[in-house]
Length: 357
Image (tube, rainbow, N blue to C red):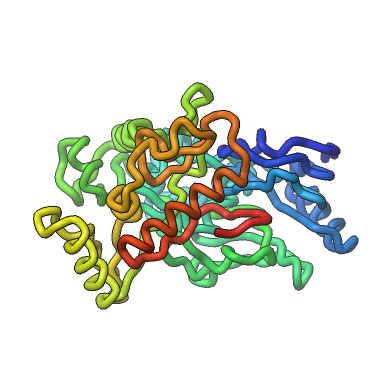
């Protein structure tokens, strides 16, 4: 365990904003992680648990308490056979994309469409990370957590995590600290059925077809690079939290109202807003579509310190000198603009520490 004083937090996040931590503890084992959290809780001090920092906007003034940096590592194959697949236990601090890369190399099918996503494995069940038609909820067997209220280790099944779109029981609460995640993956040379139309077109297959795992991974990485969604030190379009807003889930009545507003604003020839029916009867629509048609196109905000990515309207990006207050201000402007134009209130996906929209 390593202890740091006054450590700048910006360098620990992909948005690259945030002032110093009064104290940072780097936990390299599960025992160290539990001990560090217990110590802070026993002292009744402020605590921030920090993984890969890909889904956080941290305050300019820093954090006044202790930041526990999750630096645990380890990928352990609990079992692997043709009947049960591969049960793989991954430490919370293990970087996500290297794990996906290994899964593809090992012939573990089920997470290949989640290639290129930054951050740590422990964060993936919290917001039910998903992309290109896959979600981690489809492969998570269990999540092992430290329960800060009951002061004990708990094991949660996938059902107990209550996964929904970009959400779980673990999100919106600081009660649980993820220690490790077990994934149940299929032993196969082929991907899961391709579920994303653009990805299928790039691969030259039909939606629902399967392709070799390495081919699926490379196609996903190519898609993400085109959108500025693969981290690159030299490319400010990648200095972001990825998609800043979740795609809205609307009732049938809310979607009808959106459609009417869109027609009035854009004209009938523009076509209806994207519509993706959900099993519960609601309709998912596209946050990026709403943002662009509300007047916030790619690159909006340039040449300021924060701007929409020049490649993808759903990403707020740090152009090099941004502060957290700049990020929040632009996010608020976009949220309010979309609501004024279409009556839909966007919800931020990253966690805003010490701030809100």
